[in-house]
Length: 284
Image 1 (cartoon, rainbow, N blue to C red):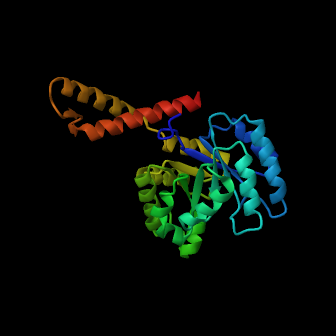
Image 2: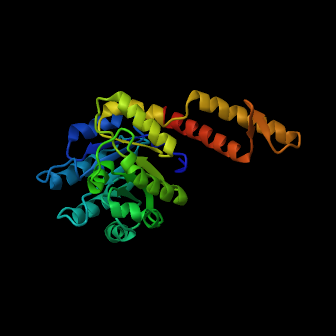
Image 3: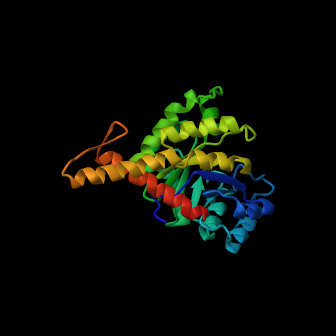
């Protein structure tokens, strides 16, 4: 599938040490899985988790889901061994926590070679260096680590996430400028579907490609929020048809629902339909 239209609506964290969770993930309707060797795995389990995860990935069964392995930081006692193991695993990308500069990704690439990389964006310095990080030649995606970012900024929780907006915006601009994927941070209250929906809607309106999730109960909300709605799909089809008809008459613009439709609107409409088709393909 074209990586530019591949859906990332729901990106679920799964502990790499939990065999039952690894098995269940094969049947969940998520677009991507972050197989976690870092925060979700206790210090006592970290070494065994590498083998557990490697065997699960070798067994397969994850279908079209994007498979991302989050390792421990290279400054930890587990990081380099994690990186070497992940480089051998049947995964699509390796996710490095607390990336603060492109040099962090360079250090990882020394171990992992040309494997695709993703970056956790969760430190104040990472926010300031977002453009340089996004431009790294091996980087495919960014994941917002909003809990760690809030800790680093010493913010208070607000439903509107106003204290985090500067960092979220910096990373969004950097990712969009480089044409890479960027997914929003987690919503901690996994039983609060209404709050999750509001935050997903905010993230979608900002331009995020999807939402990282901590519980399967959050999947349906994220999948719905980050997919084109039926109204959006209908409008896209009508915009394309109207513009094609206008062009056939030698006109450069069309009018749909009382609004001008130009080339840029048609390009967006085609992207919406392509995204809808891609979602249908992975959901089949």
